[in-house]
Figure 1 (cartoon, helix red, strand yellow):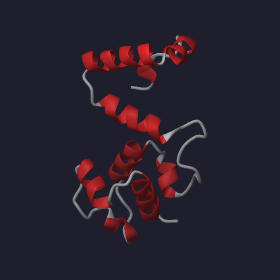
Figure 2: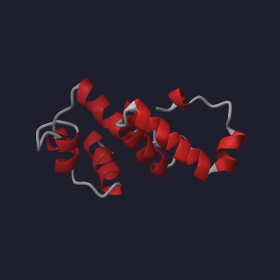
Figure 3: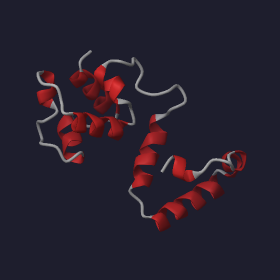
Figure 4: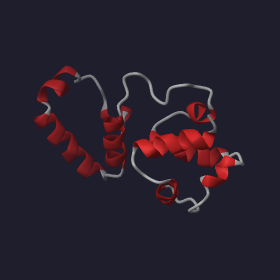
Length: 117
């Protein structure tokens, strides 16, 4: 499977077109389609890997699974959204989550949010 195929598969899983993905990553509208015949720059490859929370090794075909077994697409969608928040709103989100999911947070008191956000 090529780099293009892996990116296409990841985009399809999130129900977004490659044109939309390129737009979200501030790339040219058809730049991802060029990956069918050209290798991307390291910077662009890293941008795509970061967006999907996969390693560049996965995109390059050096790894066969996009995520570790414990990873979940919903978690990464929440993480991407949280990264866009300012510190005050991020703290509000954490408080809402702590109140809503009290049991999960009480078991993980030793985890620092900066490890994830």
